Amino acid sequence: MRGFFNREWSLPEKRLSIMSAFLLGCVLGFLFAPIKKGINCWNNNGNRNDCLPEKGTKVTL
Image (cartoon, rainbow, N blue to C red):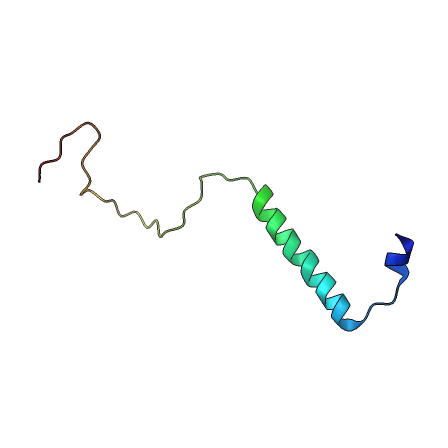
């Protein structure tokens, strides 16, 4: 483990390790973040779809 931290890093290796750590933190943050009201993948601007029948009613075409 000491050899890993004491070695000399080139600039591309430094950039890659910093970018990897940042992206890993983003992914772990999304996975472990508390979900309060669920996840919406669409625009929820308050419009309602009133064309669908209510539960328990028959649909006539």
